[in-house]
Image (tube, rainbow, N blue to C red):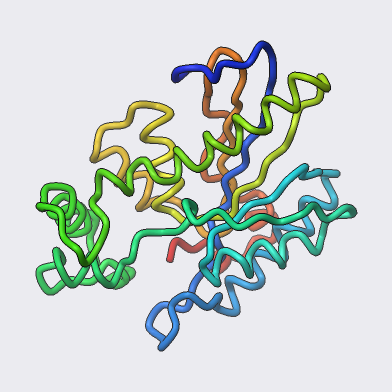
Length: 238
């Protein structure tokens, strides 16, 4: 397993669950709204958590509607609903702006009409571009989610170390944040990060274990709550 630099706490173990939002409404006047499929995906995640006895000690999401609605629907299935917290660092980059500046006429929201090599070119142009007032740099975005999650884990670790408890923290976020968190945690190269972003499925769960030795990946991109229904239309990536 690959570990990053540990957080300076005597002893703790924190489970971090990164949940990508349900399918958004691509091709409509409001991409940020969950589609009917996205709503079903989020509800099925909550039902799965309830059946498996999963408990969340704290829940976080960004300011995006699709993240917040996914969290709301998934938490309906839990016996005990934890407090939810807004963390802006969980927000996705602004696709429309990046596409307009670096897409060369292509849109990253084109779904099956966009090939991975085309998407990689868009993102590489953003990565290599000079800073602009219209959007944050790739370099800033690539550490945004990691820093936000590290801050939450560090605060939780102090409490866990004093009580001897282990926390489950759930972060409802987006594919770009999940991919860049893996980039920072596992030292991914840029193209591997883009593959992770490209492949992360809606309403999927990626889990990390933080302890005094650092952080390691436990699961990536899992959707057993969707696969068990044998409905291929529930497995989406937009």
